[in-house]
View (tube, rainbow, N blue to C red):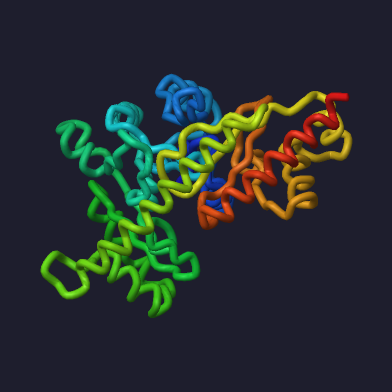
Length: 326
């Protein structure tokens, strides 16, 4: 995968906005990043037309070999439909791409009508030739409903990988240090949860459903409150743990930020932090369409604190924006 061909570096397609770990890893291994834009007007769905645009442009200077898909989305909080996933698999098969499916938030589904569909299942049901596409699926203990961010344990499932490549991968992994004992123990619990009839099954289900129900309530609070603020547009948080609202920023604010050598959304986020103590991440850190401004925030604070935060956020936003419209 990471081998130059005809003097061109391998390319990796990543969504924009994207989780910055991907762009950092691509740079570390000397590969080429190929950004494709998610469709904000369709709740951050993958746009096949833009995938084709991106890969066509990229082939002029690199050899595209991988496509990364994050579902449910980080930082965008969307859940891909089965039709959208089928279209992506079809695209990958036609273009000869290895699919890397980041599915770590697969349990975190909130919006009515949304459902998680694994790439592995959809690919298998599509039949030949699509069920021969190489696929890696990722899952982690530090995400999802358990959300133990201090515990580092994860796994990947590899589908249709060449036998010799798999043998080499196992050699590489055996030469690396393993996760901590706690991380290994936790991933064992994740892949082998209590089953019906076992002593802890009822309490496990009650706690799991309680956590997910609370997150769903908070997802709605965040979506509804941001959309009630003039100049902020927030797609429904269908899954994961994040919202990625769009900001309508006045030209005066944009000019001020650029005069300081700062991105406008960074300038906004910095003043929000200094004025209210509320910390958000500027959208420019994840990538976004030129001329648009966003930020990422989580749905993790308890509901009562979340409501208080949203009140402070709204008061700041209205006052700050007005100060550049005088």
